[in-house]
Length: 334
Image (cartoon, rainbow, N blue to C red):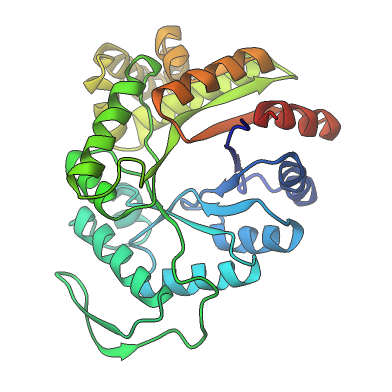
């Protein structure tokens, strides 16, 4: 059976935009299920996704992620309904709350209550995409004029995937989402965490597999420079631990990696980013990221599938476009 795999497009490094677009065209041909485009405090996600909609035929186009604070729920519905129309039904709404640093100090919006903001955003977006009059009496949003979008969305529902970590957010994800995007779950804990999440879904009165699960981290097929790819993976891990608030460190502490979290933060804060990266232990990196050959990465994907993952996160490190297409095809499988 073919694997469902996804890729992420780094839209912030724009030295060769045409090459980035070609990479996704190649992924489209190779059978990759979804491309995700992140958004933080750099370039927006929707512009590049719209470009990709005009250059691809079947690959799904997801925000991985956009936060639910910097745009109103109705504005998000406008964005996604438009993208869905242009892509002929391939939009995927990947939502997260980000954190107080970005929300309060870049967007200037109060961060709390995060779970309520996410819940009401999903509910309002679903109403608008379904063509229902927007009469909504929530804790945060009071909408009473019955507005509808001024065009008919081409689907009555756009899939919504949620990035969530804490128990209240996981409960809301299990109740409302179509997909769950966890992060930083060590491989040894993955099966137990997915099982626990499925139990939350059934507790919400839904079938256990009503919410798909994306792999929490990624495999990297290192075809050019494995040492550099491993360093980059450690850099991402260190940045999230040291510079992106307390959520991600707390997640790793919960899985028994408190000493590593403390060491990375101490090294980064006292000596800078390179020292923080150096402080990431191999044991933690190996539990959260596989960097290796096609065969080694395929084995990790099989481990994820047995643990309950539905959609696998893949990066192929090469500038050779023919090799990229062949490798993605091998990972998708027959």
